[in-house]
Length: 132
Image 1 (cartoon, rainbow, N blue to C red):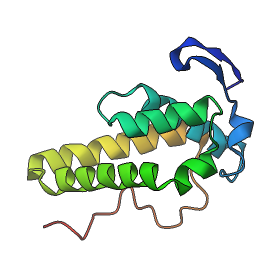
Image 2: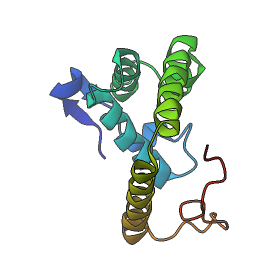
Image 3: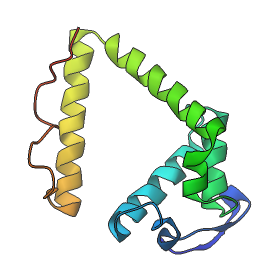
């Protein structure tokens, strides 16, 4: 995605190359950029994470600074705890539906980007052992 002016964030938006300090390659930088845009516009994730994404997307802070920020890391930790709790409380039917969605997303990703050559043990299709 090219840098440009984006009214959604109140000005200039960084391009993918500006995320290469934390990404391993241009494709990963592009994925991170898309993820930040999703976070910046998703009302369900909380104001701190939306703010962090917007700050990075506008170049006001770097991604490395964001992940070193106690405030933003605390917000990420809180959100991960919420997601973990929600996952643990899924019914067997909900868990099965969630796993099917994950497989479908993986298939869509691989159709677009090809298989992940680094993923020797395909964790997407492997049954989870941590079910309670």
